[in-house]
Image (cartoon, rainbow, N blue to C red; front, top):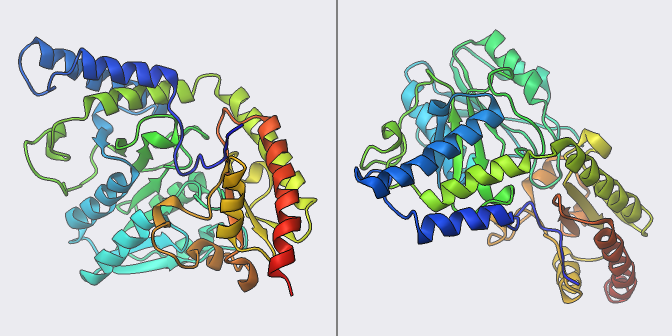
Length: 384
């Protein structure tokens, strides 16, 4: 039996997503910019996806812009608003545990003359509203904070931070990387004072290579991709109709029977956490229970290197991660684990287990059984 517990890296697609994508590739394959019937038919899929996404956010269709995924959405949000608003100030704020698509973009802007403040987090990965308030100045034009950390599942206090930002500086924009949070939580950008929100399809059982950026109507933002003026000129390029149609379907499906699905997901998470804590020299990182996201569990295994344990599990058909998939080709210590103060001996002994709404309790039990056997075996060779 294969057990896939790397859903924060990517998810399998819903059957309805696959059906929709096949239809738009095999039958309704027109270019949505074409004026003939095939083009009009393709454009309907794009428009319908906007309707599905806008409904999930209680937003307007004109506020939804399609991208190639979370990385592009984050880049467009940060680079686009920095370029459009730099006359008002060149100060940006983010956190010390952001995804590379945010942290690397901030690093680039710092090289271009912007100043960037990196907010610290506590031992659970949470940012402090007080630290944010103290960091803000009249020159602050953008604050970017992730909704859910991709490595340890920390849920940041987004609903608290948005109103604080606007009270401190009404012109400062608030960007939320919701790639790991969308589909697990319900987002209402207007109520939470969020100006820009990034989402990726393949984290919610949609296709890879497509996502969207919510841009509140009235926000000043410049494009970073230029061409045929599609999507009101903000994101040029022929729309990926199969991907967009699949994304819209995934959004609709992920919020179907949502509360019951999330309850089951939390039950699996709790089963995994309690089982891990019964194993010798195992530490669970990040917030516990419903204080954290329902799908991510980070655990450190004393005396065993993460890559060794990862591949040992793989041999048993169990797939997990040693950290963020987006940083897997760049070996090094996790900035998130360093930021929360994880002891040095555990920094290279940590695995991420990430579940989906399709994960079963039987799969959790099988994983725990495999871990118990493997730890006993591997520690014979690693401990002196």
